[in-house]
Image (cartoon, rainbow, N blue to C red; front, side):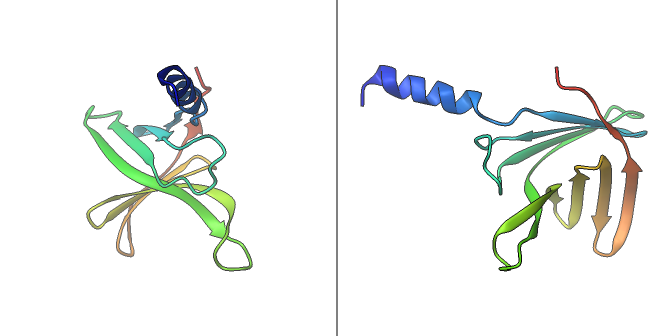
Length: 119
């Protein structure tokens, strides 16, 4: 394969990636950026950047898309949002605009937000 063709295919693939989305809750501004090719249902390469609107502190995590399972118990069905892990703390950002942070069975944070329009 020529270098030009390889570069073109790489550029097309990069352009086809899903766009970052920003959720604004009362306490946080969360950016979620899937780094998979657009249309990949079960993306396992998603970046989370959460910034406290009070303190300005931020955290960056890697995660995956979250789905229900179809009747076969294997195939991903309805998209729910994304899930990110920081040790035993789990961050979930739901498509409906909810940010939920848990540790074990304890809910540390639950905030409803709104998705900002894409730029």
